Amino acid sequence: MLEINGTIIAVILNFLILVWVLEHFLYKPVQDAIENRKKTAEAIIGDAEKKLADAEQLKASYEEQINNAQKRSQEIVDTAIVASQDIQKEAMEAARKDSGIVIDQANKEAEKIRSEAYEQAKRSIASLVCMAAGKLMMKKIDESSDRALIEDMINNLEKTELN
Image (cartoon, rainbow, N blue to C red):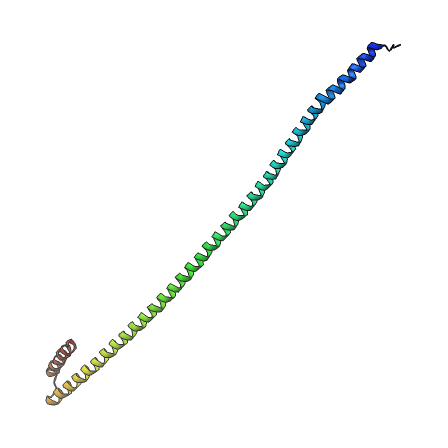
């Protein structure tokens, strides 16, 4: 069997002292260093995740602002189009109204000119009828004198119209 002597006890004792020394001076500091590294890595990862979440939130916010700006700009463009159509419609209505006034004035002027021409023609015809009646009463009418009388009346009519 196994004999326990001083050498085995010294080896066991040396081994235990070595384990204690290694644990106390080597294993604990290495474990602490590993734990510190682990905590630092976790903190860095946590900060990175937080910054990533903040960045995604900012991105979403900026995208929403861009969408709102695009909608607002489209609303402005739509409003401008409607306003320009209203202005165009008002201009067309004003032009129609003005053209109606001009047409009415032209019609009134044409009616006035026509009326004046009618009155002048009436006076000329009345004058010619009076002259013809006067000449007929002075002469006995035959075909040659009728022609001369008609030509004379036409010449007088042309002279009267020119004046």
